[in-house]
Amino acid sequence: MRSKTLIHRLFVLLAACALLAGAQAHAGQYKKFGDYQVHYSIFPSSFLTPEVAAQYGIVRSKSIGIVNVSILEKTEQGGLQPVSGQVEGQVMNDIRQSRFLGFRRISEGKATYYIAEFQFSDGELLTFQLEANVPGTRDPMPIRVAQTLVND
Image 1 (tube, one colour):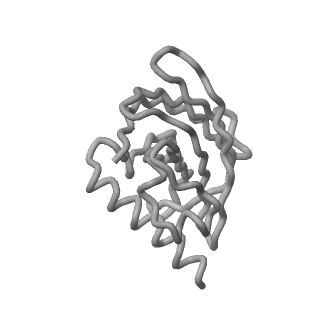
Image 2 (cartoon, rainbow, N blue to C red):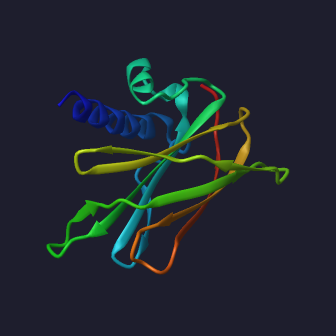
Image 3 (cartoon, helix red, strand yellow):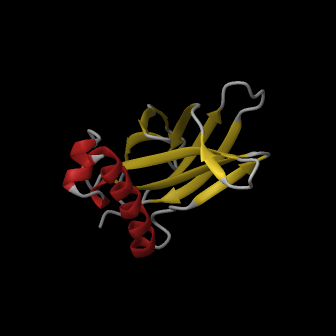
C-alpha cells in the first residue's frame, strides 16, 4: 500500500509542478494514436521531493531532468487503462548533439510508467524524440517535442 501512496504522490507532485512551472513542466501532455494515448512530462528532477526521488532511485539536481511517459489504451467503456510496452528515445541539444535516453519501467498495481534521466544546462533548448511501442501493435507511436528547461 505504501508504494501506491508514493506513486500517487509522485503524480500529484508532477501535476503541481506543471501548475507552478507553467511552460517548464509539460505534465498532462499527450498524443493520440488510434486507441492509444502516450502521455509525457519533462521537468527538472529538483522538482521531486527527496522522499519520492529516493523511492525511485532518482538523483535530484538542478542539472538533471526527468522524462516520464505512460501508455494508455481506450477501453470498451470509453475510459483509459494503462498498458505495458516499451519506450525508447533520445534528446538533442540546440547544437544537434544527441544522447540516448535509458528508460526504466516502474510498475505498481495497474499503473506502468517509463522514466529516464538526462543532463541539461540552464535555458538549454532540448528536442526529445520518443517512441512508444505496445506488443501486438505494428506501428510505433512517435513523439517529438522541444522544450527549454530552467534551473529554479
